[in-house]
Amino acid sequence: MRISVTAKPRAHAMSVVKIDDTRYVVAVKEPPIDGRANTAIEIALADYFHVAPSRVCIVFGHTSRQKVIEIIGV
Figure 1 (cartoon, helix red, strand yellow):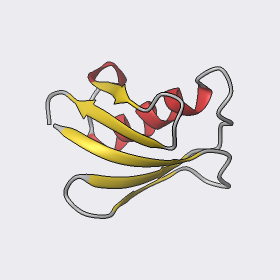
Figure 2: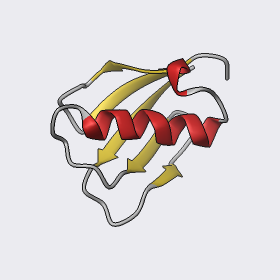
Figure 3: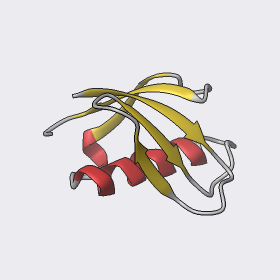
Figure 4: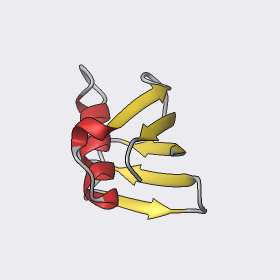
């Protein structure tokens, strides 16, 4: 399953908000430095979809707030 994610790094709290079937907003506390926010987004989505973090992969948008993420096994 592929979803579009709007990333919000340096948020006050971690959250995953579903906009529609394929669009989500993910807020994480980590800053966008050295890929820490991307890792936190993958972990947050893995928790949300109840899959292992290794099953969540950023396909496009590693350096952008708009990301395309593939989740295997959902």
